[in-house]
Image 1 (cartoon, one colour):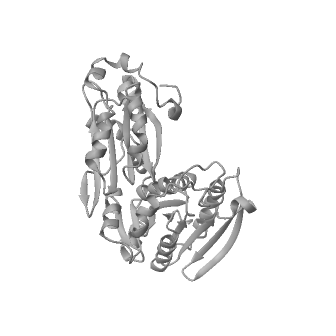
Image 2 (cartoon, helix red, strand yellow):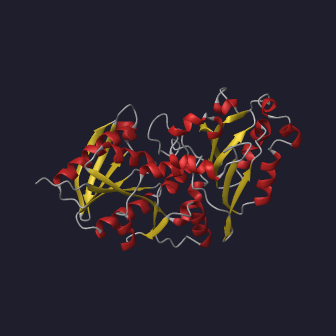
Image 3 (cartoon, helix red, strand yellow):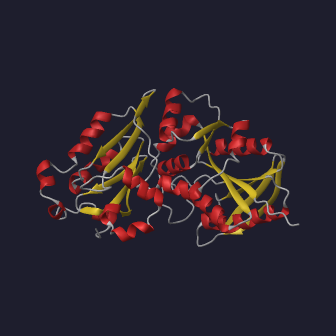
Amino acid sequence: MESTARLPVVIVAGLHSDARRRTVDGLLRSVPDSVALHHDLATAADDKTVRREIRDASGPISHGEAPLVNDCACCALREDLVPELERLAAAGTTRLAVVELWDSVEPRTMAEVIAHATESVDLANVVTAVDPSLVLPYLANGDDLAEAGLAVAASDRRTVGDTWARQLEYAPVLALVDSEDADDQDRALLAQLHPTARQAAVGSTRLARLAFSGFDVDAAAAAQHPACALLPQETEDAGVATLVWHSRRPFHPERLYRALEDLCCAAARSRGRFWLADRPDTLLGWDAAGGALCVESAGPWLASLPDAAWELIPPVRRAAAAMDWHPRHGDRCQHLVFTSPGLDRAGVQSVLERCLLTDQEYAAGPEAWKRLPAAFDSLLGSAA
């Protein structure tokens, strides 16, 4: 009878390439009959190919190449990875496939590809490899990936800092290398950036167990959405602080726009959701690292939708809105989180509060708010 067992796959990601390699090596040693797949994208733009290596604990097993797709190395990775995993699954001799992502490839992209592309594999978990001493330097790095030779396509406009932040915060498991340069502040920063992560030492039996503990791509996506993200709580430890700031009053668009540079440079990492008085129906996402800020529409606030549309909204989103519902504004709110060593909590809070509508502006009501200067049109477009 043909076996219906699915091949467990664990993704190992991270810009800390040495830590990532050591994490993969540790898994290969800990899990018998495991193999690792790695696609090297470093020279893809020059020779129009992506190089693939498959190895086990003893060394390389095979090498191959995949052609560049749409001038995008990450696209070529997706096209080549799934057939290789299906081939390993069909052979039935591999206990665990470890997908070691290239430096700047984000785990969410590949997790969703693997989870939905084939029935022959099972996404067992996602791990980000971390050198604790490098968390802050990478998070504070505002260089474009292209400048660092890490872009995956000509159109890649990401920075080192925001890429690293997403790699770190998406994975439920962090594999930590033992670094002599890491101190208590580094460890406190890591804990505050991703307080729900399960941490395990590279090469430990705990990490090998966590590799098989299961992963839900839909839940992971929901946890990253600004409307229902699992944001850190307020805390302070070893000189690292996290400020959680809430308000029900909308921002004055022009005052907030003028304060953006100060706010995004005030912390190593800030994120959350917010609303502008002139765009009362649009939930806006805030995502900043390395001094660079991304502001984008994350869809409508649920309070702006007709009742019939709620049936189309995922339950996790409805639950998040219900927990934070206001009798006048519904789920509209400011919920921003700032994390950094040496964070000036009072200073950040003061800047944010000055950006809110004044009592007089607030009393004028929603119709007057919509006539305020549309300062964010350059970032979001003119549609409200």
